[in-house]
Amino acid sequence: NFMLTQPHSVSESPGKTVTISCTRSSGSIASNYVQWYQQRPGSSPTTVIYEDNQRPSGVPDRFSGSIDSSSNSASLTISGLKTEDEADYYCQSYDSSNPWVFGGGTKLTVL
Amino acid sequence: QVQLVESGGGLVKPGGSLRLSCAASGFTFSDYYMSWIRQAPGKGLEWVSYISSSGSTIYYADSVKGRFTISRDNAKNSLYLQMNSLRAEDTAVYYCARVPGDYWGQGTLVTVSS
Image (cartoon, rainbow over all chains, first blue to last red; front, side):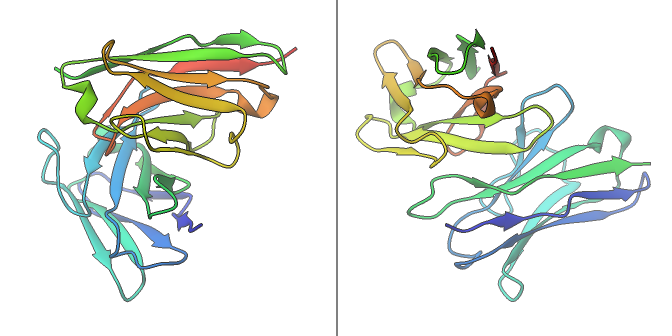
């Protein structure tokens, strides 16, 4: 089994850009798609990025995803931060033996 | 529009059983794999189980293997999770989600306590 490791928390000011990393412990990050979910307090998770870098309709283009094979990690970048972006963010991927693997989640504070 | 509505949560004693349901609408349920994910209070997301569109392929997390059973009824557009031998550590909000995770339900709370 592999693990996905995220920073516990990040914080940034409104209008700035923040990047949240998600590092895969074994196997190539490029081998299986990575999804990113946003979860606001008291709400269900919603997808902000799927298939590494695709945005669902309705998600602003301030959200972008990427992968870096050299660090075996995926990243979620949010530009032009707004207070409404304050939430927990989870990365998720899979392999042939593990249909869904979640990262531990990152709490984004916009202050 | 796509809707997933979970039900069946509640308070149960350790060792007890509970059956969760997830009613799907707004899409062709039989075309999609489905998954259960849970979230313990104040904790992160934990994948629980996964079932293929026909029900022929099923996976479980090690933490629930042998105790939980996932199933589906495509004629009723419904997904189920039978939970037996419940433990305190199974206390969580349980979400159903359409694979690949594009739609999630609102969740149902399961509390295992004496």
